[in-house]
Image 1 (cartoon, one colour):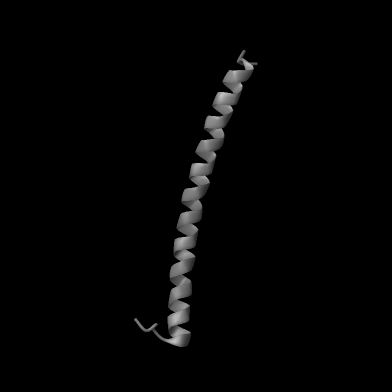
Image 2 (cartoon, rainbow, N blue to C red; image 1 turned 90 degrees about the horizontal axis):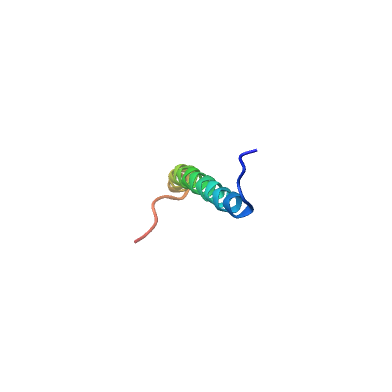
Length: 52
């Protein structure tokens, strides 16, 4: 084992979880932005451009 105390394991585990969440948030933002652009194009094609 790495001879870490419980508090050290919680600290490093929390850092690892936060890093994972940041990576997943970036991936979700990219996916939602791409799918949003596709949806906007599809809606403009079917219904025309919105009034402003």
